[in-house]
Image (cartoon, rainbow, N blue to C red; front, side):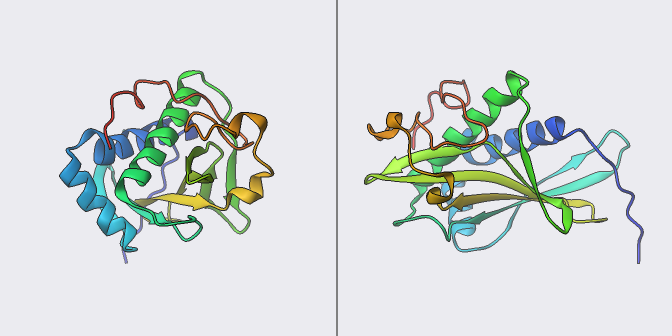
Length: 189
């Protein structure tokens, strides 16, 4: 069995790479390609995004999965794309402003993490909370990016500013910012 060398990169750089890969695969591409990718994800399949060559010339495979088991209602492509646009905008803002992003790791596996920035959107009066997680697979030359909808009730009651149902508002969370970054602008769903 082949030995895999572990390479550590700063979390900010890893998060920036992840955000760029998500943006390229699901927002920057044409609607048909993005919708086909979404269809595979929504059916529970992990999809290959790309291979990234690291500074040491090693190659790391990036895959993507979607967990929408906590999403309330019927998730469709337009709703998913809106959630993702808000999440990417907020992650981009946090990175650009060099804010300290809370990272939650699995108790028994530090390779499994969730970034504490949320993409909150509203549909039919219900908030939906999308987050980005990653599993860097101990010793494996691959990363599974995980988009996950979380149960909004674990964040407490929505604040006063949530009453208008705007996608720019958010549930109390570890890290949030406005959805006015270039990553969020001009995207059609």
